[in-house]
Structures are given as structure tokens and as C-alpha cells.
Image 1 (cartoon, rainbow, N blue to C red):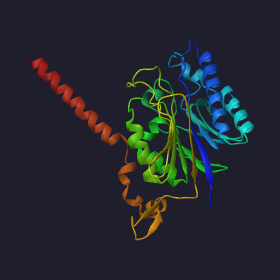
Image 2: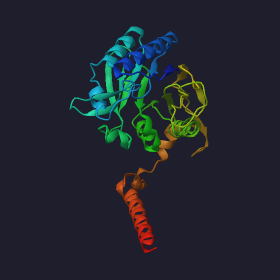
Image 3: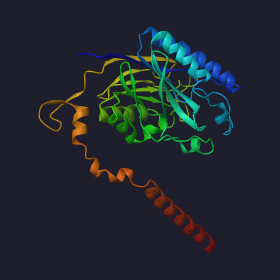
Image 4: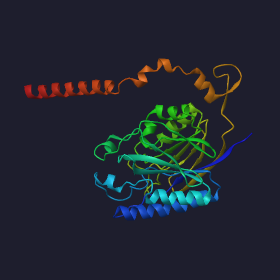
Length: 315
């Protein structure tokens, strides 16, 4: 039995405009063109990059909230129409105002009929997103049922934590989507972290970022580009490098990665073997209060600075 699925990672340009409205219109036009290209390849699921409705124009910190949209907003409505017209599911990352009036960094999961399956709210917003921008972190790792199978989403900084992909895999995700605007890590993200997330959890991983600005060399602070698809064994199945475009790969979700004599003799599905051998009863350190290590380090730093200041005063 086979379950062939075509995945596309969309890599649009990061367009600079004087106003947010102009930037939104430009990005909506750019991603629509690229999604039409993805649809021409019979794509089942297309993934777009993070913050799609708030990038490209200078915004004050207090403007992110007023620039966010609800689920009946411009970007969501346009993507729902496109999804239904081309029978293609879309993962749409936006700044969103939820039903409680809170600002969220969300990924809206739209099915091939144009329906909203649900939203993932970024669990690990950066500290600069939380304060002063006001983004409220999510606290769950939902998995969404699409016509092709189960997908999960982790957004940008979520990938800094190995627990993100593991929680999604444990919740049943067969494909993990990673929309982001990562820059500082550079190619290490692709070459090590993403491939290891796929290997460790026996999942496919779809990454979407913006293309690199300009014609010069990549430098820290630029979008990393390299949107693409990683296989269960960590192999890069498709990749966009730095340019605008769409990376596409077809995978078989009914063909698990097999390992030979990994924990017991013979050939067995790796993802199942990992789940059997896990020892969650011994992982208490993972859920220890997060303040412990950070607070200890900060106390040492403050004490060191106080001692240095005292030494200077004595001198």
C-alpha cells in the first residue's frame, strides 16, 4: 500500500515597502504566484514562511497588534479561496488576533476545500516578540488531520528546542512544517538541526523561509532561505537555495524508515522503536522549573559584576 503525498515549500521574496498595506499587497501577490506554481505540480500541502502579514514595512512595537488580522482577514480569506480552487492544503503563518483578543504568532492550517482545520500558536516566541510586541505564547502542540495524513507545525524559534518536534511526533504528526524567518544560525539550521529533528522523530520536515535579499553573499541578519523538504532519514529531498521559488518533493507516508538491529534484531520502523524504548519516567529534568538554571546564571553574573565594580572602586 502507498500513500503518495506531494509537499511544496514556498520561498517568496522579502519585499520592502513604505507602508504595511503596500507590503501586504506585494507579498500577497508574490505568494499567490508561487502557490499557483505549487498547484501546477499537483501539490497536496504547501507551506509559507512566518509573519507573512507583518513583514516588509517599518512598524513600531505597538503597531504589530493593530496590524494583525482575525481569521476573516485579507490573507486568510485569499488563501482559503486559493486552496479550494486548486484542491491544495496551505499552512499560512500570520500575526493573528484570537477569539480572546490576544496577539498570537499563528500558523493557520487550511484544508484543500478551503476550510480552516485549526491554528497553531507559537509556543516559543522570542523575548522581543513577547515584550514589547505583546505576542502571547501558545502552550499546546496540536496535530491536524488533512486528506493526506497528520501534520504538525513548529514556528521559527520553536526549532531551537528539541522537545518541539518530539512533542509533535508523539502526538501523531507524520509531517512537521517549519515556517520561519531564521537568519543568525545560517546554514547550520539546515545541515544539522533540521535533519536531526527529522531523523530523531522519523518524520518528514517542510521548511519555508524568505529568499535572500540582494545579489551579494549571505551575511548574518539575512533570511537564510534554503526552504525545502527533509526526509525521515535526514536526506534533503528538495531545496530552494537562496532564490525565490518553490521546492517540491513527493513522499510515501506509508513507507516508514526502517532500521536494522537498532534495539532488537531484524528490520523495524525506526519511529515505532523510539517510542517503545523511551523512558519518560526518567525525564524529569525536562519539566523542571525553567527559572532554575537561568536564575542561577544571572545571580552569578550579578555577583561577578558587583565584585568587579567593588574592585574598581577600591582601585
